[in-house]
Length: 341
Image (cartoon, rainbow, N blue to C red; front, side, top):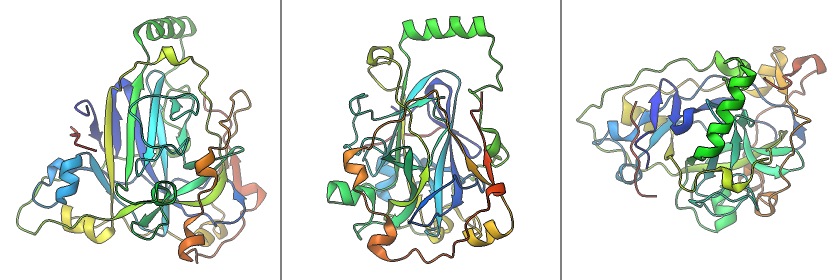
C-alpha cells in the first residue's frame, strides 16, 4: 500500500480524491473549553525517501513523510474529498476516534474513522460530548503522549493515515445522485474556506549527500486543551465501504533542528503566542452541524490527561477572546512510499 499517496505542495493526496493538510495553530490552555483556534499556515511536508542518506534509518523502514513541529504550537488536520471516504487517523498507532489499537479494518462499534467530506477537520483526539483535546507534539519517553498513556509504551510516535473508498455499488449510486443534484465544486467537497489561503505550495527539495544521518526524532502527539468540535458518526452501513484500504501513510514529526539537518532548510518561524494573537483582535472560530450525530466519548481517550498535567509545561499566557472575535463558520456546503509499520 501507499503507492498512490503523493505530496502536492503542502498537502497529502491519498486515493479516492482525499486531500489532507497539516495545519499549524495556537496551543490552547489545558483548562476550560475553547473555540476553534486559527490556521497559521500549513506545515511543510517532505518525503522520507528523498533523503536516504540523512533521514533516520527507522524512518526509512517505515516510509512516508515528515514535517517540522515546535512543542509550543499545536496541529489540526484539514480534509477535503472528491467522493465519500473513510479515513483512519492514528496517533502513535492509537486510533484518535476510539482509543483502540491501530487496525487495518474499519469498525463502527466503536467507530475508528472519520467520514469525509462530512468531517471538514480534526483538531485532536475524541474526548466526547462534542469536544476534542488538541494535538500537541511531545517527546517520547516521558509517558505524556496518547500512545504512552493508553498502551503503556511509546514506540511509534507520529501520525498514521489510512483511507477506505466506497464500494463499487455505493459509489455508482453516489455519482448518480451527485449528477442529479449538480453540486458545485465549491460545495462541501472542497477545501474549507478559512484555511484555503494557508495551503500554499512548498517546493520539494532534492536530496543532498554529505552530512551524517540524523538520529530518530522521538516525537509523538499528546493531548492539549479542550475545544468544541464534533466527530461525526457514520450514517452509512459497514457494507458500503471497501474491505481493504486504498492507501496509507506514516507521518513522522521532526524537531526544528532535525528538520534543518535532514533537509538543509530552516523550519518555519516559531508561531506567535496565543495571548498576543487574541489581544491583536484576530479571529477564533466556531462550527456546529445540527444535522449530524456526534460520536460518544471514547472510553480510553476520555481518560487521557493533557500534556501539561504530566509535564507541567503549559506556561503560555492566555487572553480570553471577546465575543466578536469568534466567527461562526456554519456548515460549508510527489510520490510517497510506504514501509513496515
